[in-house]
Image 1 (tube, rainbow, N blue to C red):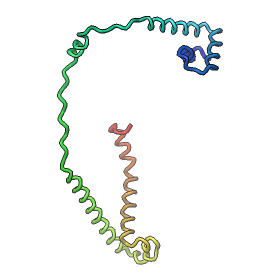
Image 2 (image 1 turned 90 degrees about the horizontal axis):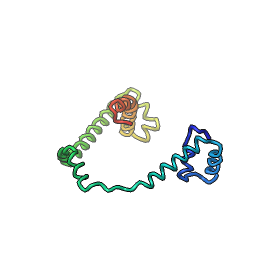
Image 3 (image 1 turned 90 degrees about the vertical axis):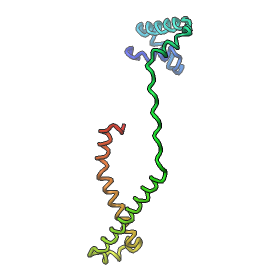
Image 4 (image 1 turned 180 degrees about the vertical axis):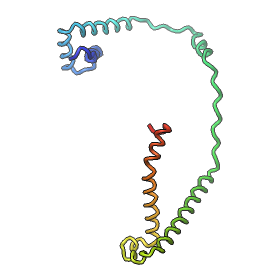
Length: 163
């Protein structure tokens, strides 16, 4: 046991170690005066604290402390909640925009010169042109999200919103 580390002596004092560990600490105490003195100091401090009588504060102490504290500013009123239909209207608008974009993507894909040759491939055969448009739309969205992720991460770290 290193005498720079007094944690084992604390373990012995508070009886928190296994009996075999306490035995090895006691054998160290037989040869180390520094650790013996530390244990004696802990025991003496414990006895002093045990002998210390609890004192009851004067009855006016609590009122005196409260009067010394600054007056608490009034709490702000809670924010009023908006009409619950507004979020639903926003969601409906977002769905309408996504459907319009999907229709546009479907028409643009159908205009591609190689679209007819893609008709024989399994994605177009199994999903249809609308399904492939949806898949393309979401794939492009995923790529955009992955491209923006590092920027958003570092921006949030800069603003302190991530820990």
